[in-house]
Image (cartoon, rainbow, N blue to C red; front, top):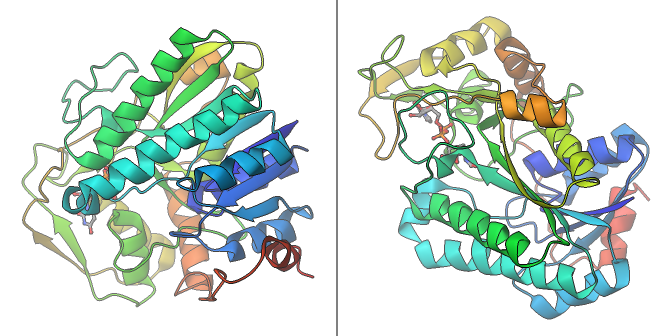
Length: 355
Ligand code: WQD
């Protein structure tokens, strides 16, 4: 089976590509490397002993997208490509709508043109907005509190309406909680550009000495220790969830939705303590003001994915932190910077094959 992965050079994408290749799928990747590096796929190829086919394409380049679909004619698509920084989306809403929503629309039209109607979509628990009814169920009402979350909500609704209009579509909306961790080799992992927005990569950079201390956004929430609680999920568990959803869609048309979380919450201080314990490094922190838009606590009810997909997260916080620490300590500044934009697709594929 041939799967095309958008954003496949990214954090979750590269881990999912590794799992697909290991399981014998033919994999094509399209990525514009705006928040990723082909180096991740070179390392995946080295780890797995097989490489995907890589194309430097932006989802906003509709003609190029149609051409690549006409030549590849994949059986299914896993769609990761998208901008995902909450704060940035508040400052640049139109860029987020164009990139995430228009990009997805271009993708769907390119798929339809070649009769490819199986899609796994990278959605997010952010579509639950500031719901305080915990644990979060797939039936929990959706809302958006920022443009990024609203793009995910709009895309989910677009996909539901598409499936309702044409019964040939088989669609899985996967609502991620907080993806963290790294492949056990430490060769691939999360490589955020600039100052990390998210907690775990920031803590990892403090532990490895790249940053001075962690700002804990709020210490007076009604939680176990006053700091924010989230449902962190290991990226390798998350990748497995995508293959389980892809498998489910082989026999089920229509639009479906699943939470991909562990069902357990961890506080900011618990994460910091775990990192200090596992890395045996000091992780200094300072309690500061709350971050606008944050909820006190959220975590999933992952039962539906267990019942429907036979999937559940296997890795706990200690392993998430241990695997993330191995990646960070082996790659203190992430993937090496290289200019890939000028490379042809042929040169890119030679690069990831190590030729
Ligand atoms: C986690 C906790 C912060 C940074 C967001 C998006 C979500 C998904 C994951 C894309 C919170 C606290 C954080 C820091 C801190 N992104 N924190 N100091 O906000 O739960 O989710 O990222 O798909 O859609 O909404 O993740 O890692 O930013 O924050 O104290 O430097 O850590 O307040 O309690 P979040 P996060």
